[in-house]
Structure formats: C-alpha cells, structure tokens
Image (cartoon, rainbow, N blue to C red):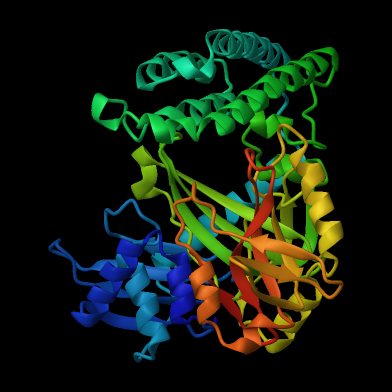
Length: 483
C-alpha cells in the first residue's frame, strides 16, 4: 500500500470529512492501531459518542478498489474515523502487526461473492422489457412535442416578454418533461429560463433590464439548441422504435441530451472502452448549478495514451449532496485498466470504476507538453466547426503549445510558432475568478515556449472567438490558474 495524505484526501467524501478526520487524529481518539501481516489491511478502534469504541478498517485487498468499513452509524463512506485511521498511517504513527479480525475476513468473503456475482451478471445481462421500453420511448416523443410547442410559443410571444413570472410558468411545464423521462431536455429548458431571474424567483431577484438585455443573445442561442434537440431527439427516438432491438445511439451525444444516464456496463458493451490508460489532471472546478439544483465537479484530464482532453463530471443534487462523494483536485497520475468513454467528439466525458494512483514524474510533464496542439489555426478551425453544431459544447477546451504570451495594445494574446494569435480573455458570465492578472504575475520563463490549457468562448454579439487561460504546463509542473 502507498498511503499518503494526498491519497486520503482523494478518498474523502467532502472537505468537512477531511477536517473532522484530522480532528480525530489530533485529539488522539484512535486506539489499537494494527496492520495485517500481508500489509493489505489496516484496522483499529476509535473513541466515539457511543459507549463502545467504533471498529474501523481500510481494506486494500484490491488496491484499485479499496473497501472502507466502520461500525459507526455514519452514512458517509469512508467516514471520518476511517479517514483518521489512514491519516494516522500516512503520518507514520505506529501500527502493530496483527492477524486480520474474523469479522473483516467474513466481510471480505461476502465482498468477493458480490464481485463474482456482478461479473456473471455482466456476462449475461438481464433481458430488456421491450414493451415497457417502447412505452417509455413513446412518452419521450410526446414530451419532445410539448417542448417544441413551448419553444414555438416563446418565439411567437417574443423574448422581450420574458421575466421572472413567465420563467416560473415555463418551469411548471418543465416538470412535465421530467415525468416524460426527459431530464436532459428539462435541464436545457431551465438553462433558458435561468437567464431571466436569479437563484430564486421573486420580485427582489428580478434581473435589472440592462442586465437582462445582455442575455438575449444567449437566450436565442439556447432556443436554437432546444429546437434542434426537439428535431434530432424525435428522429432518434423514432428510429429506436423502428429498430427491433431498440438500440441506443453510441455515435452521438443525443441520448445524453435527452437525459439518458449511461451505465458503465452499457459503455463497455458498446465497446466504448480504452485499456491501460494513464490520466493527468490539468484543471478542476466545482460549480453550483442552481438551475439544475445540483453541484457539478468537473475535472479536465489529459489522456497520456492518446493525447485527448477528456472530462469527468460528478453531479451532486442539493438534496443528496451530503451523501454523494465530492470530487477534488488530483495531483497524481490516475492509472485505469478500463476507461469508459461517453459518446461525443470533442472533450468527451469519461468514467472508471477502478484505478490506482502514482506520483507524477518529470517525464509525465514533458510527455504532456509534447501532446499539446502546436497549430493554432487548425485548432481554432476545429473549434469553430464544433460551435456550428446547435448541440455542440459551447465552451470547448484545448491544450495549446505557445511561442509567447503578452499584451498587444489592451489585449493579451497567445502566439504560436507560426505567428497565429488567439485573444486571451476573462469570460464575464462565469463565476470563476479572473486569470489574466495571474498570468502577469508569473515569471518571464512561463511566458515563452510552454503549453496552456484554455477554455474557448464565442461571443455571440461580436462574433469574436477568445479563450480563458486555465493552466500553464511546463516541463516540470502544472500551474493552475483557476479552480
């Protein structure tokens, strides 16, 4: 086992659990710390609020999928007691060698049985209830017809009539989309209504007219996306009904747009798997998406095998945020024996169920830098073509090799080896901090011959393409400019 504090932090469900676990260690509540002879399990006891000490353990029989156990009533895994146990190990506290307790051995056996059962189920998946699935697809088609009528009504009445009150009325219709198995379409509609009020609908939260006028271009673009979703979604669903096997589309993102939650087993069955992959995280952010009523943790990863920039998304609904593991920045290499890749072309989403961590080496930084795009003209052309798609990602991400960055008049620009330039700009609509001032504060060596992770932004009014700096990648480190 290689357990350090960075690893333990990565396993914590949230920041509060990290703080509470450190408190357990500092207050010396851990007792009888032990490690198995084969070094696969650490276990011990912890003083708690109950009359008996809690029994806690961290089982690394499978290093890619550790199992955490504790007798406390917490619904968080791992709980603060297990985290404290691992922090104590990482900090070098003494652990006595002892045989694995019988209850852990029994639970290990049961765990192995569950794993084998899961494998057998994956080999022979359950049969699909064709009749029920057809009814679901028919309900989705009807839901898209409702969405299309809402879009037409908005166009007829004009966006100038939109305000907090009308947004509330539209969101009542959005609830029907959820009932029609279209959570993705529901979120897309809420992204439109969310442009016309703040986090809560009330007279106090009405957006001022001047600020509201700035959102009309975004609203028109979102209307176009909704219309395209209705058309493409209806055609896709009708094709599924006409297919005897009712197959999902694994070539495009339309299923996800409608709200299909891909299971890892589905992605594997469709062959959307990459083997023995190493990932390096270049940026991370956690966003409060109040229109969807959930927190979204997004990681930007460079696939060191293919050079592709891939994203992880972790969704934590408000009502269950306390019990869903909160993702965080990762400063190690993630090694995945199987990496599942969602349908999509640019910056596809990825997931994995098992992984190991290893330290980042200088050779990894050099390799990552070599994988950066060197031709700015080709990259921007690819981005512009992607933006032409109504359902394409509106803020694609790229890793660009640059010759220099600096000010040209009142604009900061990135220039490649051919003299092509890209305007660097802070996007005012985002809740992230500005990054351009941070670039000015870096040493001169970081302004020449490095690589930059950027998020593109297409201004709908000026039709200007710019990019926001997220990270600087050198031969020895990653300088993260935002979170």
